[in-house]
Image 1 (cartoon, rainbow, N blue to C red):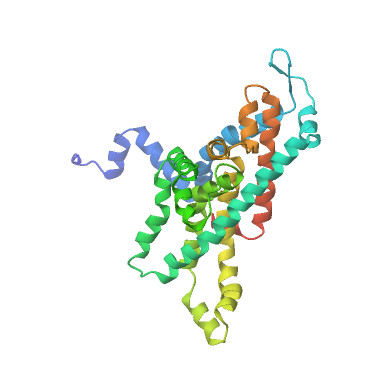
Image 2 (spheres, one colour):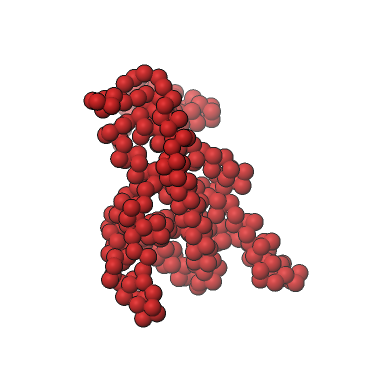
Amino acid sequence: MTALSPGLSPDSATRAAGPGRSAVRRFAGALHRRPRLRLAALLTAPLLWLVLAYLGSLAALFLSAFWSTDTFTSEVVRIWTSQNFEELVTSPVYRTVALRTIGVALAVTALCAVIAFPLAFYTARVAHPRRRPLFVVAMLMPLWAGYLVKVYAWRLILSEGGPLDWALRPFGLSGPGYGLTATVLVLTYLWLPYMALPIHTALAQLPESLLHASADLGARTWRTFVSVVLPLVRPAVAAGSVFTFSLSLGDYITVQIVGGKTQLIGNLVYSNVTLNLPLAAALGTVPVAVIVVYLLAVRRSGALRSL
């Protein structure tokens, strides 16, 4: 600490330190007196990044979907046309792939909810309080491994003559192999923690007094679950479904590795990026539109406040 010279007051010392520090102090004081200005300063940078990087890329994607491709050179022709969207609507192949993709996303979301709920209930309400953090860590442990490592591990498990076939052979059964079932199974494993963690948090915050009150009023276990637990946990389930649904809707690597001949929208976008960029852009708008509709539907449940 620098000692003050005799006769030099603290204010004089601040002025002597230079105009830079004084300007910083005035700016900090202005932010302290104006909460809205402070909030705007905090949000300006991330909002600019969101508008330029995310919304800007979506706008470029949507605009490029109205262009066409030269059939001879495969170069993009910047002439406005709705041919790509007309092809999406009229072609039965694209309609089938779009419906299959939405069905896979919904199936994965439903399976994640069914599996995650009892798992989260045990970790949040049944397990000993000292062991609950360990169970939460175990529940999130699959996220520590790399995406490709987990998918290729499942490819080995689902292979013909693999561990799953070996375990089911004594019962006269066999594994699903590679295909649509394998895709749903692997995606469910990949995104399960994103559903289990919000449900665990909601169940951990569930007041014990509500469960006791329901039991005192004569409600059975199922009645308590439907009337007390489920309404309070439903926003967390919907919040987790936002992750599982959107991640499954845009995934294409898992389908390529364990999906066999199965095709989803992500695969079509990937295969057309170099061949027909405008068509790939039109295909890319389908999951974006589906996710927007899904978010609008989920918003009414209050799930967005739980994210």
